[in-house]
Length: 106
Ligand SMILES: [Zn+2]
Ligand SMILES: [Zn+2]
Image (cartoon, rainbow, N blue to C red):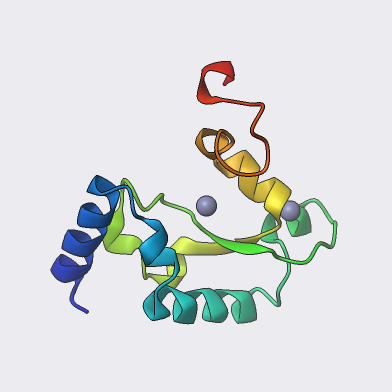
């Protein structure tokens, strides 16, 4: 996929509130696997604190919403455990694991 196509696709998904489709795509799956391999399946944020924790997800350093052109760029990814990932996304806490928190409290 070319970069303009990628940007167009992602912007469309964001518009339709369906960014999940990106994370379910084969394209992302490949980048995610490569990132995990590169980072030895370890949370890179914990690692800088001298801790070992298995990576549970791959995060976009520059968020996809702001930088859709970097969505499939391996250099823009980092493997994180879920708690470090949550710290990177305070805006997400209102949907998944912690329904009692919402954006207003942040
Ligand atoms: Zn971590
Ligand atoms: Zn993330």
